[in-house]
Image (cartoon, rainbow, N blue to C red; front, top):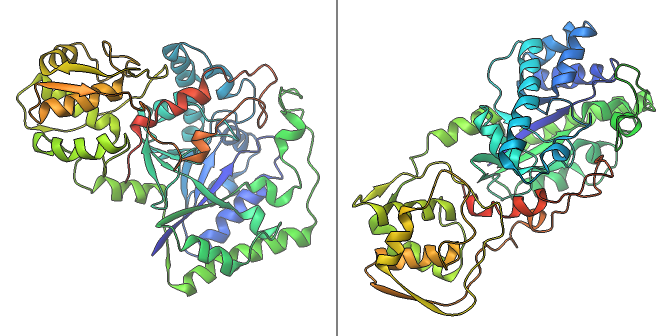
Length: 430
């Protein structure tokens, strides 16, 4: 059985007319008995009030409202102002801007809890990944990692990747309904998404108003070319047809972010026992990758805790990756259990991990710590990879944000793409 989420990048704050599509999509889903996830831009929530769109708000009240940033493509974009060396400064500015956006959504749509954030365009920032869960949004929709299970934990949030857009299905005819169902059937969970403004218009609103810079004064926006009425009617008809085909198939259920999170919360708490160290060592000695439902950072926390204490049980907490590339040993070395315990005392586990621990790389130290916890008094180490294998996560592995989407020409991507990869130690399976 595949769980399906319908997600809507609800973003166009430049067009009152585009809001008609938000209303229509929300009403179609409600008529079909489905709750959608409408990811709302803060400025659009504000504009719905300014336009007097009580009809749109009423339609949305039957669905879950998620968050799609304060201003979407209003510059500076969140990637532009978080691409700095100082994480704390970037996070503080992010919390200020995005906190204002969340407040606008809650104020104008009358909602309390928001369960997920969705990035605008190609705006992937490790700062956002860590900050949104701290702001009470534990899930992230449309991301840089994916799994057939329909999600992964990354940077302390539950990440779910978009699978297919409704525009490509209903306007571009990229595949038949049956082909789509067969593709979705290979997954435990799938997110199907669309941009409501693209139902009515042939181009994106931000292409003509916010491409690389704020091209127009706020409120003085250029309209986009419209789709003909018959194309719009076809889109709505295809959406209804897809939903009904899924229902008739019997292999699909419909869910929301809140329900996904509730199911995750019912799972037993993650735990590492001192007696697990031998099995963890065997797995990580072969490759530094997630083990079961534990991230590499979870195991690192546990190993350090066991070296410091006599405890037999450890419950992993928030985890963090690196702000610099981890640097491993370049020649064989031998360390003692006492040296490893001494190094453990100085490690801060509630912060980004150091790229070096004494003369060792972090993966070197982790393997040696597990060896010591399994009884070794001296541990010989050979050079090894310090980062996990990113081949299963090609989008993260190949990420290069400079020159993409609507980013300004001044955006250098000096830190974001690399630092996102350096957070891979926090990846863990559902």
